[in-house]
Amino acid sequence: MRPALPCLLVALALCGCTSPQGPLPPDASSDAERFEGDGFTLYVEPGAMDLAAREGLLEELRTARERLIDWLGPALSPGDFRAQGTPRAHCPPNWEFGPRPTIPPVDVVVRRNAIRCHADGEGITLAAPHLSVHHATHELVHFLAGSSWHPVDEGLAVYLTERLRGGARGVPLRIRARVYRDLNQRGTLDPRVLQHEGMSRRDYDVAGAFVGWLIESYGKAKFFELYSGAERNYYGVYRMGERDLLDRFWRSIASLQVRGNSDYYRFQALLTDLDGE
Picture 1 (cartoon, helix red, strand yellow):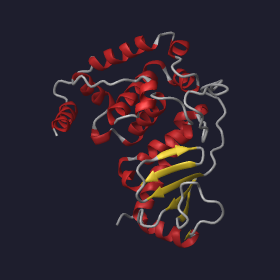
Picture 2 (tube, one colour):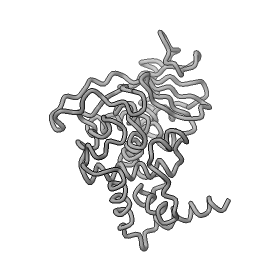
Picture 3 (cartoon, one colour):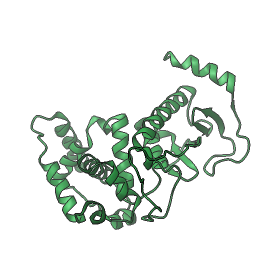
């Protein structure tokens, strides 16, 4: 048992882990238990998680919340969900000193057998089997940044989850993108295709690598102008068309030095094994 667990048990005894009172979030079951945390209210379906798992989830959420509020700054738009590609009224007027909105407590519903996790204007819904791969951090990015359009919305959540929690399977996004490229599995970042057909694991990885490249190459301010604006307005923000930007992105991926990189060969072997199944 970790040293922090007794503290959690004391906190439970003091503040209580009770049946919900008042209106429930839409995804919460009527028998969910409510647990108040710092900046979050958990609604946990019976059997979804034990006390140690709740402690770990709250710690992940608290840590991510603090770091994301600092990183997002004036781009914070908690719970602001719109139809795909609907622009916001304005972009942050002053990136360094723009006002930060107040972040109310976030409702987090944990379901035992849910198929997927998601965020919306009501809060976050998590599938208990997915908690070990930090989907809670991913969905918190969506909630705090507000909605945008594919691939930049999912790309941002994937990129920031890697910054906070490390790469999936320990392999950085840009290395994963290089493997996809070398195996001729680049896929597409066309929002119409991604919206209609859904996004595969490859699509999430490539979107995360692309968003990371945009931010690290051109800065957060320009990226959030893109994120807050009309769908595919690459030229209006970067003065380059979508094709030119994607060509530059893939050239940067192609220039990575991967000889002797164990992550590269490990991920390539994983994809090759999966293709052979």
